[in-house]
Length: 113
Length: 116
Image 1: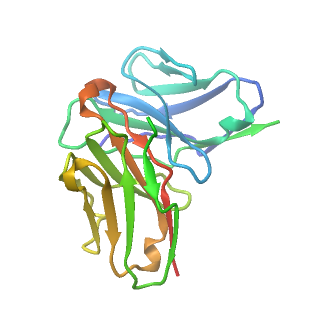
Image 2: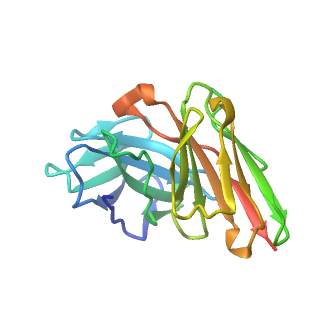
């Protein structure tokens, strides 16, 4: 199973952009990159996903490196409500017999007022 | 779309007792997953259903754990003879295979179990 590596923690000032990196050097050509976040005492919340091209939605942007060995989740203007643990996960496009997510320990984002 | 719901949200039990958790997935989702999360760690996969069939089980799912999904709708996770090491957040997620490459898992709020 392909693994991801993320920094344990990051800090950002409120209303400033935040770039959360993820390394996935063993990614295969058919793995999607998914990002989730988890607020305290809640289940993980879907943020965004992509395969090769950069993606935007109302929550965030996802920038994927050309070689796909890394990606960056971009929060354009951090708010206090964005303080959470952010997980980067690889999901196979075509089943290898499993659909499970493999979570790492994620990045704990602190947003300073 | 009311999202994935789980019941109860919190459970305190004594060591050796049996507990059962329920998960109601998003109504049109045919896939359902159980994960376990301990403090400071990311969720760990336990088991997965497609409709009523249990297709994958993690080695974490010891013989004290059993999961069912009768009729392919809600699912239950039972832990028999609970141990203190079972204390964790138990998360349920669901997804739809019809979305193919857009398939995404949506998680419930979890059931927090404390075994005394």
